[in-house]
Amino acid sequence: MTKKVLLTGADGFLGNNIVRELLNRGYEIRAFIEPTRQPKTLEDLPNITFFRGDLLNPADVTHATEGCSLIIHAAANTTIVPARSEIIRRVNLDGTLNIIQAALQNEVERLVFIGTANTFSFGSKENPGHEGTPYSGAQYGLDYMDSKYEAYLALMKAVKEDKLPAVVVNPTFMLGPYDVKPSSGAMIVNLYQGKVPGYTNGGRNYIYVKDAACGVVNALEKGKVGESYILGNQNLSYKEAFTLIANTIGVPPPKIYFPAFVTKAFALILTFFAKLRGTLPNISFPMAQIACDEHYFTAAKAVREIDLPQTPLSIAIKESYEWLRDNGYLTKD
Image 1 (cartoon, one colour):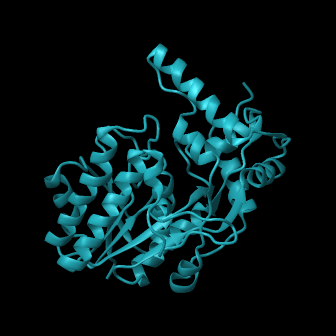
Image 2 (cartoon, one colour):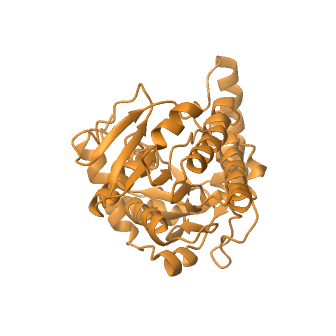
Image 3 (cartoon, one colour):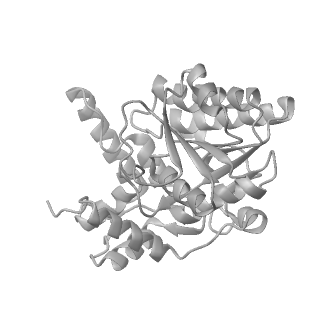
């Protein structure tokens, strides 16, 4: 019997790739979509129906869950500018609480919650962050990180107290196709357009989005209830990442090194003038802080326990570039 999966955030970057991974494995999908969104990248796919509703409306979420034996909760508000916003907290925390209650009420077999690697402490390349390190993202003052962490705690509480059959996956920075916003793909767009003059001393962990989608579905099938799995691959400094991307897409890599104090001072100046104009800065101070830190993680647990693939990042970059090019995002303006 074909199992039906409720997937929130189906038309997002990761969601698009999860949809295709689920279809490849024979699942039937009910995609929970906001009423005003047009999921053009999903409309021609088989075995997918759309449920239009509001994640913040408990009745909508409960109704959407009826008849589904599995849930993947990928919907989230990932905004980091402005740093504080009530809607970010409501979507990420209250929306997750609604999913938890619907899963319990409808007695689903498994819920996979898409968290973020920033739920755990980041580390150095020599000592990367892992699933056992405590949350350290509060230092940035971002509702996105804080609300995702609070949602994670609420989920873990439901697992312990209500026997919620939930598994958590925590992706790092994803690259690949179907980045409709674009989100991470903006890095490739900006490098292609020559809008990245230099690099900071920070870095992060990267993963091919199709590998992350595979990890999500693997967690659905064989993840251990109550466990978390960081979905990542390679730790690269920004200099290393920008050079790899530039070489892959055929543009010159950035040459200028920006010390931390310059990066942070520049962000403060941008923020000051943005406030005078009543706008939001292109680079906020928390963004500058993050850019100067080493957000390195290990995905060893996910590789070992849920068979997370580790595709070379050059493939992820190439596919991201080709998808952005073919969909009109790469213009030399």
